[in-house]
Figure 1: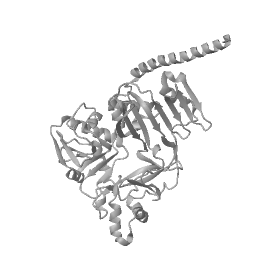
Figure 2: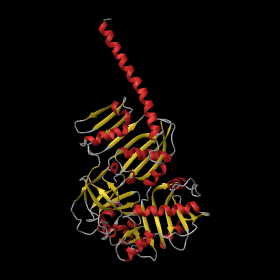
Figure 3: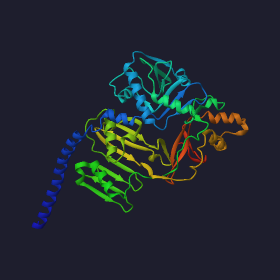
Figure 4: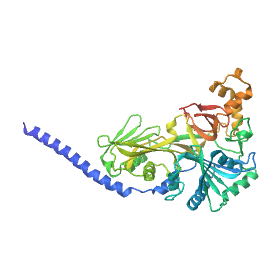
Length: 468
């Protein structure tokens, strides 16, 4: 063997050895760094920010249209309600199980109805309020809460299994915000909601407005929250994720603009697409695992490193699983546009999906959209928003075809009752079409399928299972 070949082999060996030793050293640094930064966002604070009601209704009693939905100012109102719930749960002396339907009747009185984004366990809700434990802990599947504002000092938790739980409060707390809302309603400044049973020949407590002209939501031009051409921001986000290991990351920039950051032999990968989509995967799972609340804090902290504001993340799903034998938590967050829930032609745009395994983030996926510098699109914004009732009337034939109802087999009123009875909820949302325009829209949730109509024109925008 020649001396030159021996030198080549020796240099190759030394190079590979240095990589291994450097990798071992970096793992120690990463571990210490992880310990130092763990809990940067406190678990209780993270829960306080991301666990928000899906919807809040205020019922003023007396029947008719004495109901409103709180959209503007919902976060501030939730802060007041959250404190009210915390006081009531912390000081309760009596807990009793009640009939679900009887509890629903409280909405006929002056009360607040809080619809939660998913079925929440009592222990999880207790910790979200900043309490260590409560008499609510043994119950699972809380889907909504009713707080009477007069006569009844209880708080009612409606469960997904068809039962309800009443917790006795020491007193009925007054709500300053409800008093303001009541005054606004009397002055005609708020949109009134009616139960469908008072509008149509159908037994339904679903709420919808008869006159929605009081809502003034505009069409907006959308944009990617992450601009791939912004070199400084792209690099900074990668540095935020990889930390001290960034110097050992390989970056690949594709012709189409996609950026991929790879650490090691591909065990950690961050990918940013030209359309704003971000994906991350880390298969070097560390630690034996953490509890659910600390995992949420990890997820929120990770998203903040990619520029997502924690206060704008709404927790929609929590699912526990196992990855490579380690406890893992899958979290799905949504975000709003101008206070309204976002719906899209591409469901991946609606959510931020984060999985925490061991004690670190295992995967991340988002494709967040935002408004293009308040750029309005003056399509039909000078008109009034149509009522859901008008949209139902205008699209009656379409819905009849959807549900395959044969007009010859029943009278018009029977067909109408059949369609109306399928409606589970009606909500004003923003819909993002592939034209990249945020469109104010009414979403009808009907037996597992969503039907979305332009709120100004009544045009069908999207519909069907799995499309929304």
